[in-house]
Image 1 (cartoon, one colour):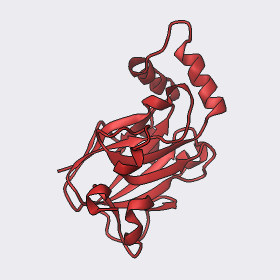
Image 2: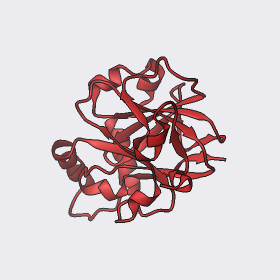
Image 3: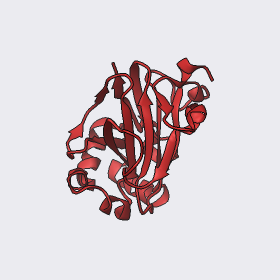
Image 4: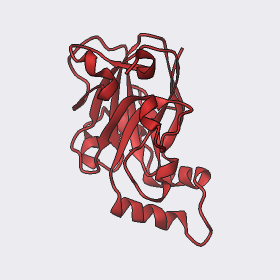
Amino acid sequence: MPASRRGFIRTLGAAAGLAGLSGCSSDGIPGSGGAIDRTVYIGAYHWGFILLDEDGEEREQIVLNRDTSLRLVAFNTGAKRALETLPTAVRKAVPEHETLEERNEARIPHSSSDGLHELLEEANERYPDHSVAVMESGRNHMGSGMWDGMTMHPIELLHDATRPTTATLSASQQGDYTLSCLTDCGYGHTYMDRDSALVVR
């Protein structure tokens, strides 16, 4: 895969040759390892993503300088045991289920006969898992060409995970990057993108 297609992300460390495939991911909270410039927490819920900084402040967008070393700590907001392992400031900043449901009401279309609440409850029961992938913004994330713009392949975010999953990445190319769920998670799955969530300048 050409470097331009890898875009934003390349894996740090010895596995750099595999960067375009999946990044360097592991279970657990950031700890030891190479120098990290910034840590960002990504929570996946039905049907969106929350971005939190290390102080627990929710962000609409994370802006990075080129060559910033970034640690993404990703979790399913329904994974209670994983949430318990997050730093206190981050854990307390994760919005309640009702707040996330209100966000869905504002951004996900639905017919008046099919209440979004009922669709959400069905999804929570039948499709509790998510994933997060990072892609160049402006690409068709759900279509047949989605792999062309993939810069971090999907990381599973299971509802019964006991710890978050981390990925250590390097912001190597300027541009806007979208978070996308590629795991079928029910009615609102096609809306589970966060466009321009990460920006490298």
